[in-house]
Length: 233
Image (cartoon, rainbow, N blue to C red; front, top):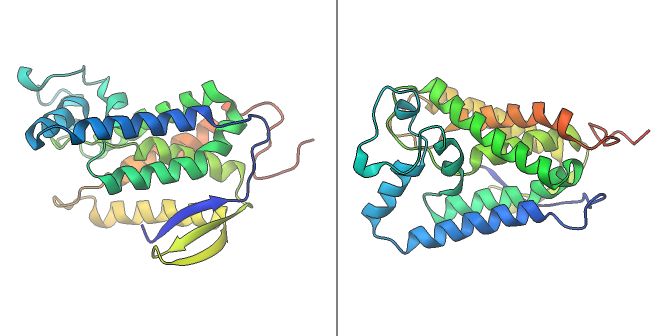
């Protein structure tokens, strides 16, 4: 990505601490540390067994018994906790930490977890829909975190945040500008790179998760929490 979020100016109002956000980050880090202790072949087998493989999810291909870990439908959840590299993990967790707290604040702990997991499931199903014959495992929390970004966009588009442009230049920008650019970047990359066999990013999964988060935040937010930074009535 051409930018990295660092912090926003949006304090918590309804909860004292983003417990679910912190727990999800801890779980992702723990899984990554565990897999980093394993041989490379064993890690690849984990990704095959716990990641979303579109052709397996759609029933086009059967998972070899020696690689089976969970039912194909369950991989839509388990895939969210595996990452391919330290930078893959670090980037995802940074986005989750910066944006997750205010979405969790708006929904409460339990509903935030529902939004996160459901957006992750939708992201996996989106990847299956656009590449049903793919046998490459899709892993990472990006789709679920995209759902958090979509929810944040509807809640707080007028807030300002600090971002690093090209990972070097610090700027304070409106959240709406940052997140609209982010989703347009995903769509553009999906159109240009989606059919490239060397592409290792599930761009359309991000788009699916983002849209799911935008939809889910409407019914899941607390009563009295307004969209688009409008003041409470």
